[in-house]
Length: 381
Image (tube, rainbow, N blue to C red; front, side, top):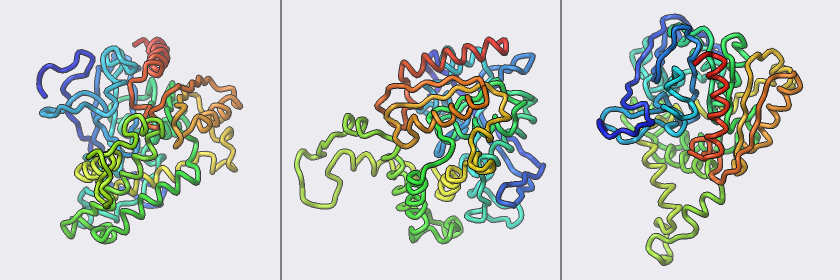
């Protein structure tokens, strides 16, 4: 796609890669002696370097948050919110989004070559945490000459990273925006993640995580993991409205082939995901979700965990999100208010489920834009 781009899009974009020779010490006890981060940026950094915004992706996201790549008709994953005149207005902000460490879209991860062995890391790539990601993102900020972010912004797992930024680097950001997030996973969510991991690891083509050495991919397991994920991202209302009990051929055939439209949708989502995502990266991302729990180091007291934050917060939840329901966001709000922190909270009426944070829902976009106007005014953007 090289022409007729939407006027409110950032247009054609291309990823960049930053190499780091400095060691990164990980929470698991291992050290990456060197690593790469792939990122995209949109808009212009002002002379004061005060208008930079860090966008943080969720489990299956990446650095391509907005705009279009040459030859592609599919925009970035948060095209609804990033661009001229949109909530994250690229006429006002310099926006950065990187592919998380351990990813499979160019940043160092399981599909990368281990310089110590000359082979792909595969399952030998160390497990990383949200805090590890934040450390690597801080190194990227240093490399870009950004001392303080106007805001760190993310939905779902991205929102958890925004919160971790406020905890670990209180002097390096003004605002933290966490959308459809939670202070930690519930037992049910950990269970969903474990079922997904078991689907991958028990696939005969997994080969203990070294499937690339065998020239294969655990397609069935990864597709099943994605199918399970999609069920949890949508609400019952959204699935009913989109599929109902519609039959593909208008009748029951009494067999185990695809008969219902929802079955066809899930199988398509699973198979298409296999062609663009790595199975071990999926394992890593779900583990990072499971491990996120900033209150754990403070006797499970979230108020104590957030006591040192200095950023102002915006928390947003959606009524139909049963994976990270509004009550989980309100836990964060209460902990911030316990510390007399600056926090805004809104619960948006929406029937799209957890995926609502990606959607152009009018009330959501208005709220988001209003808050980002505040951010822009504070930094002179």
